[in-house]
Image 1 (cartoon, rainbow, N blue to C red):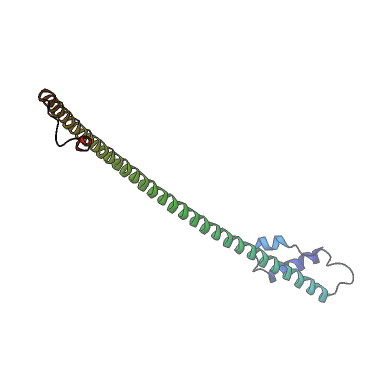
Image 2 (cartoon, one colour):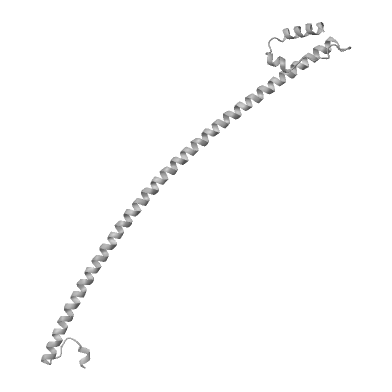
Length: 165
């Protein structure tokens, strides 16, 4: 077993640039004392382990970079969503203010139109009253004239011209 430890220390010295975590991830093969393993096979097995370790590190780096890119895209998308929501809320607030102004103007115009309608109604009532007063005066004049014609026995000359025939 001392020979195995010597080989491990030699391999560790050769690969001192790998971190402790990398060394812990891929242990050395335990079959090195089997009968019939040649040093060439040992080198190829060691090269295969190193290649697998490199590929695992590349895969871990790739996954890490993809995760970073995914997180960055998520943050940016969240920022865009927040911006969109803020702009939409701002526009909705502006629309609400405009609608309130329109409703206020509508109420003001409705009040003005109601006042104008009341003024027109009042003017119409005054005109009706004047017409009724004139009609009353005309009736009085006609009644007085009729009384005078009855008293004198004369017939009005301008009125009822077509009935005199």
